Length: 300
Image (cartoon, rainbow, N blue to C red; front, top):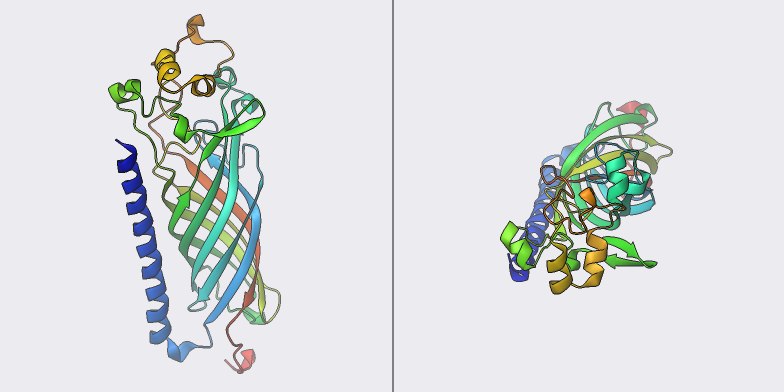
């Protein structure tokens, strides 16, 4: 697949995500009109979120809350249609990072790979409250909720060499864009995509116009390259000739080559059978931007 094809795929994904967000906006307007008689239950909020992010993949298999965590942040708009249903549109930015050196597995320690990846996400999801909840109502102060939706994200894995962090996707560390990669069917991967957020949270009123929220959401992706690790080691000679010394240095950082073979081309580097996941954990504060109902809560 050529770089043009990859670019066209990225454009297609971006257009798809944009259409989803437009559809979500349309749903807001439609439901808002249909439920005009229930304005008392409805409210609108904007908020700020702070937390952390992590990922699941070849450098962290199935271990939540592992890896080297760093701060994340974001903002959101929430439209509460009723006491049980809300639509939330979010922007998140966070870094995921993992090192084989932190693993207890000797094989991974010897592989000695690492990465960091700054992920930006625009998402829209539906929140379903377990209990009745209205912003500002002292009787409906607290609830847990589940959420799911759709997200569009951008990412670029990087690795450190000689104290500098280098973007990995353009290098083709597994032979992407080389004659070896063409022979093995290895193609350049996209740096944008669509994911599915699934998670849970808690929210509580702390005043007539303010609420706090805690949420934890894992994102299902269709990419195995958040960490730039997926399949096999590429042929060292081909990488050196077609990509240069930096690609060779970052492609194979093994402490001891398997079988003491300097060129590990064709040997396992990662697991291409499973896609990567990323997650955001955040605490947020939000403020009501719609007019507070004038009817007393006790009279409803």
